[in-house]
Amino acid sequence: MPRYDYVSMGFYTYDCLGWPFTEVPPGGGTVLIDELTLAVSGAGGTAAIAAARMGLKTLAVAGVGDDLMGDWVLQRLKHFGVDTSGVQRRPGWKTSSSIVLTRQDGSRPALHRGGATADFFVTEDLFSQTTDTAVFHAGGVGLMDAMDKGQSARLMKAAKAAGAITTVDVFAGSPKDLPAIAQVLPYTDYFMPSIEEAQALCGLASHGDTAKFFLDMGVGACVLTLGGDGAYYHDRSGVKFHIPAFDIHVKCTCGCGDAFDAGFAVGLVKGFDAETCVRFAQATSALNATGLGSQAGVESFEHTLAFMKNTKTRR
Image 1 (cartoon, one colour):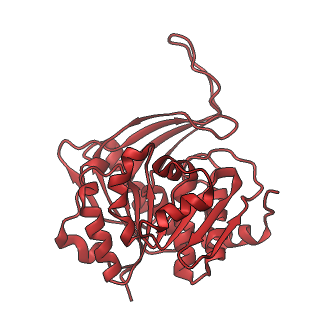
Image 2 (cartoon, rainbow, N blue to C red; image 1 turned 180 degrees about the vertical axis):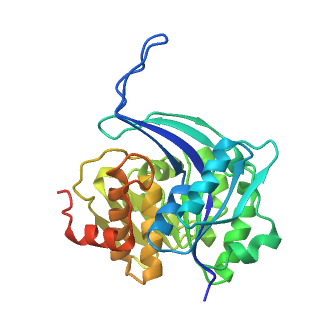
């Protein structure tokens, strides 16, 4: 049996979130808001906490700064039972941090400072710990500057050799981001970008053509998150389907795609078939969207499963 159910490597951020955001006050003015909260976010951080809340034994692999934000990120991860022995800190590093202001419609303008996500590096002597898992997730490929120069690919190759299922999510805005991401794709069982990121990388319009582009680059299956339109699945055997989004009142979309990644991993660990994995991932993402900040609506595996079974989907 592997030591962990889930290893989530990558982008971990300290987020301060406010709701509802209506306007930037002129000069030194003030606008009152209803809610203010803190959250560990990012493609790696959101996934780690959401997976842990749903019962997976989870290891965080990331970098944080030797600052107050880094202290809080580590404390919060430990609060949810996430193993933080894979989190690196170095003198002078700064924690990746954001100020996120969420509008009534769920959209979220943000101010972001990059940080230790770009600096951390998993050396070969750490591979045995970080690959001893049922599911290995690389979240935020394209932002991990040190790891994106080939080490992420080597680590994922080692994870597959150790018997782990591998999943990947990315940060991408244009075709120039493709070379760093292309390195990990031959070792990726499930590639799970948003449709916007996937299309930015490949320049193709249809879901099928977009998925085929990445299948041809070596991934086992492409799972595209479509926001309010649900999710699209397409694998190398030719299986493809669309799952609609759940019909919910959206409060904040921060971390929804990352919560989806965690839900999909839970489905894999539980032995769900592909369609149920996507449905469960959609349920995790939907619950995330009902609260302010990443993981806000995710409570437990049982709660998410009941939500999946009892909540109507959008037409």
